[in-house]
Amino acid sequence: MSNTVVCPNCLKKLSFGDVIFECGNRDRSKELTCSYYPRGKNGEIDMKEMIDMQAVPWIWQIPGKKIPKCPKCHEPVRIIKCRHCKEELPFGIFDCDKRFRFGVFGTTGSGKTTFLTMMLMMFPKLTGMLIEGWDKEHFKKYTENKNQIQDGRVVEATRSGLDKPWLCLLRDRVSKGGKTPLYSMMVFDSSGHDSENVTDTVKTMLKGVNSLVILFDPLTLPSVREELVYQKETAEEAEQMEKRINRSRGGTAAGSGDVCNMVAEFANYIRSCFGYRRNEQIDRDVAVVFTKFDLIRDMFPEGSKAAKPKSYTEKDGSVYFDEEEADTVSREIEDWLREKGENEFLSVIKTNFKEDRLKFFAVSSLGHAPDDQRKIGKPHPHRVLDPFIWMLWLEGVIKSKPGSNKGR
Image (cartoon, rainbow, N blue to C red; front, top):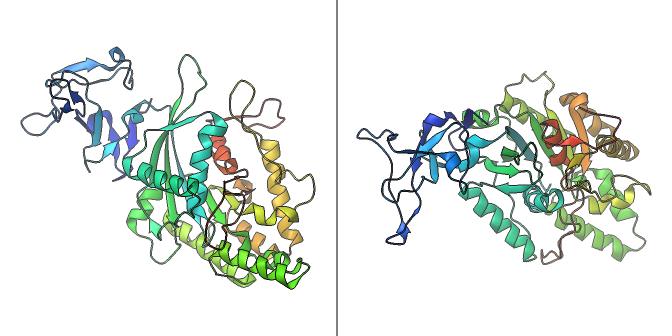
């Protein structure tokens, strides 16, 4: 159970006494939402009428704490808000066993919004863990993105900058010690990387984030684009591949020097966010993720772990992290980069980020590129949860695969 939490809206620390309680229940006599606000004469919370949370099985239980009882409808209040910014908080946020904060960054054309949407869609299906307690704004945004994918439409990219973070709760379906663990997850979704224009708000938001996901479009690598085009036997096939590349890239391209400069600029943006000096390596756990793996799958050797689909659960339903396999996949991607002559890209990555905290991943959110009308068929995601599962393992939420010789 958490004694303090961070408000996802104003980012101030809150204790249980720092929240405002509101009713939000149905008035049984009028069938209308009861709007009673339990406050005293000076606006403070009226703590006279209280009930024990553990006596209410249908609402979040917070051991050792009590919440106000509405004198109008005589039910426990169901809404809590931050005292500072007055924004609503997930009711179970104080009941979480752990809290963790991730930063997700995406370079141009990497498909970050689609990746995040598919990751959230597939997580309950592939792990059995539930996502709940969303803040209303991001739940609406996620629902819109999900509906676009299910309707066969391309998801619109996130606007440049850093909005307020996503906040939701993860509930494990597997009982541990007589209860199902609950975790608070805050995700900072950033697009654009103007290292000269990092505001204090952005710095405050990212303070305390220990794990980063950085998404790269493999088509930013010149060797990959050239191979995809020149391996075609006919001019017509090559032209079709160029069109597909342009659809995936949004019509943009980059030279080898450009992509390395982009990595360096991106690293400086992250330095500015976290307060590192320009000559310091970034000391965070970093998942370097290549998206659109469906385009480059044939470049990997037969039997490659990176090309194989992934299962995340044991027979008993528990979720595990296979560290040995993740290390193998990471090495395969590094070997692939060297084979393509992208040593400079690797060097820039390892110069800016600590190598012992780096891991490479390859995912495909949809399994295929949109067609000429920017329509998509049924998604066939590939290893889209790998970076997230790794980070949950780093946080101690997920254990190593049984029988693994390695362990954290």
